[in-house]
Length: 123
Image (cartoon, rainbow, N blue to C red; front, top):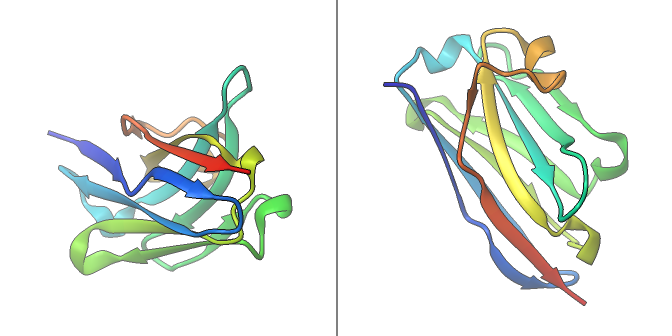
């Protein structure tokens, strides 16, 4: 059974930090790319950041680069998203997605998706 489970969301004051986790199981983690996406109330789903578990290459949405950092721990089959200097506009449900192809993940068409974790940033 393939599963992606997000955790680490919550309520945080503007300027604070959170670290999200995406725990994967049921497939060969080292051969896949993992991405983070988010969707705020009434908004389109937005790319956040992606990483290739095999070679560590990364992608960041330009506006978020410098505040958000993606990383992976292959021994734990887990991808993290460190979010710093959070702003109210970062409020959204954050999802992780996986596919064998990094380009497919970046395009938002990953084969597998998690259930999402809520991040709320207060002003």
